[in-house]
Image 1 (cartoon, rainbow, N blue to C red):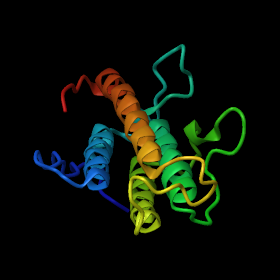
Image 2: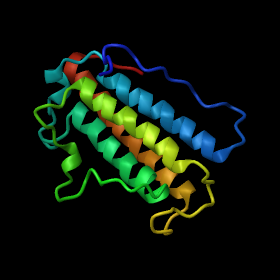
Image 3: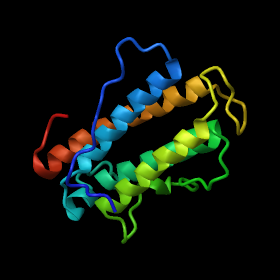
Image 4: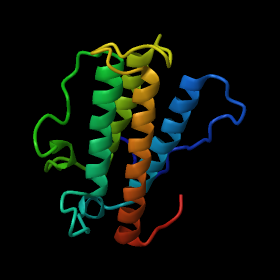
Length: 170
């Protein structure tokens, strides 16, 4: 299991980037690292806490589990055509729910494992290519959607982290 007390390295994409798909993936990687770093150092109780009364299922671990499900569906399955089970089948979306065995280390490990599946699933695709599952989207659109979804949830993690232990910033 990974050590969630240490931070994941973050790097801004190259300022003179020319490869559109690589640029979007680099921004996604920056956001992924930020998300993981928001959980680093939290106790299991802090990471599982749901302090927002109007969002009783939203915990830091739940956000990471949801982001794992987002990447699985949109990047691995829809864009890449991978034959994998969806992690969010059902209503309400079960990807936010924690299982008794979920810990910061196990949830971060699962999220990082999805990153590797995404890299493999997207190999050989360009931004103008249609998605391999249904061909209803371009890879550009799907990746843009996942970047904005991840950025939005990193904002939630900012708030959850501040409420957990007062840490603010990056």
